[in-house]
Length: 168
Image 1 (cartoon, rainbow, N blue to C red):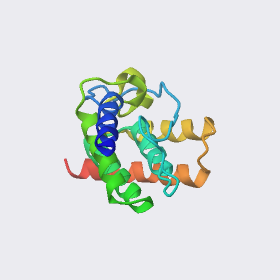
Image 2: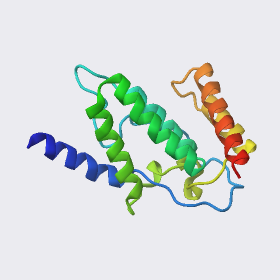
Image 3: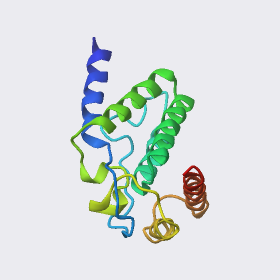
């Protein structure tokens, strides 16, 4: 019964924290610096397992945004990372919470997909200029990510966005 209560409360809180909308105007500039709170609305791990790094990476991907394909990849990577860091149960719970949160009509501004872009948050293909803006923001805001981690993330964005263009 306790597990059911915990899972239910997690799924409800996830509805409040995730999501994104379609975006038409891609000539936008970063309005929000990257921030992470770990696993929003859920625990960052247990005494035995720590999956906080998975949630922080997902927060980074949520902040940057991009296409729906980028979002699907980010959510899939979160689930795989948590499974590797703990077990299938925790991965399933987090995956379900993120999925249900994405369907929620209630969106918290700082937790939307592409929240770096402020009121322009939503699904859209990132331009090369926007990817450079994301890179510059991560370097100037002095996140806890190393230069190598930032560059690796930016390369992933570039690759994803070139794949999106090739699929059109």
